[in-house]
Length: 410
Image (cartoon, rainbow, N blue to C red; front, side, top):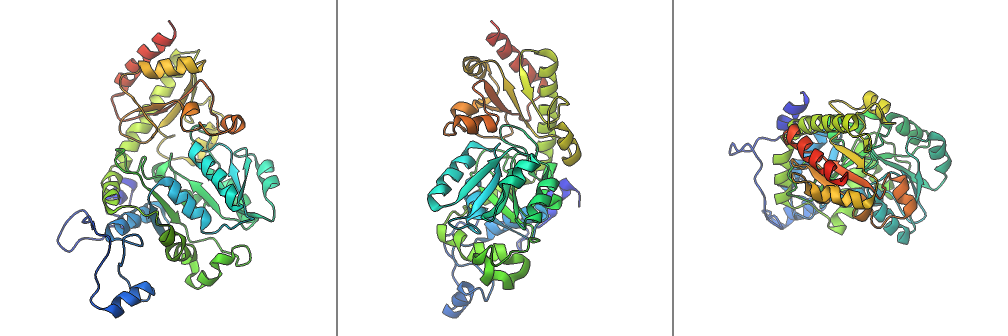
């Protein structure tokens, strides 16, 4: 199936009553016919549902669709994108382990890495696509390599295949956050990543009506029981070892599960992902080119521009576009605030991937708690504005930006 067809039909189980969408199973627990039936479900000796914290048919329907879309073997949906990252990491990490990560990350992820330090887990930050630096950061304590496909808000594009090659050379899994790209631009598992994480609150949902996250396992990484002793007892599950451990341990016990209603809303949003991304990527490209051509005093960053240092990787690796986010540097924090406040169409809020255009000043919001060095590495400057471009008519967006540019030039 091609992309838009798969959004509607791949991983879909037809409902017995003819419904074209799965019902919302808004229940906390599920009755079984007998005590022994419930026992078998708890023992994983029979299929079925017992408690929504562990599993729910509506959530499973969402997970199945994402699994097919990403080209993986199984997915687990979580309460948020941050919960999905935490579950993916802590399923294999323990005190004394280290992460090698691109330094150009979403500020919330950097905050999470800081929290992990209290549990004895260290993150070594490296410049994205700096292969010598990445090799130098890997040591006997390293247990995973992490990066974002397109950094948020740096917009640097990770060479997934090369990074996967290095990680696998050291027998390490590569975990990739694909939130800003979605499978519409790249299926990272096919490029060598082992586990992909999406904050489905963003483009997958598309309307900013649900907080959620999901991780998908490619099922190809060979887990060494000496490096990853927690997975040893799950080796009998073969390619499903990672998911089996997570389902029966951390995910179940920490309770960061997705609600059935949010899973349902995500399924509705997912069906138009391709249409929305096509429009948003085209709008972002046209807006970026227009600003670059007409405002020489504004620094615009967008992977689709030939002036971008990551354009070559984006051109080679991404399909269907270059993403729907661009950033602007306008000269000062004061001008950034004035520009944002002068806009009339975009919403000023901390999200991306909405059908509506969104703007934010990252330095004072999503990267507020990062150090100055972390901000610099992540491409966050005092005069930086992040723009998540929506599906509005591009001429309306241009006109609105033009009047805001005029105001900060007065």
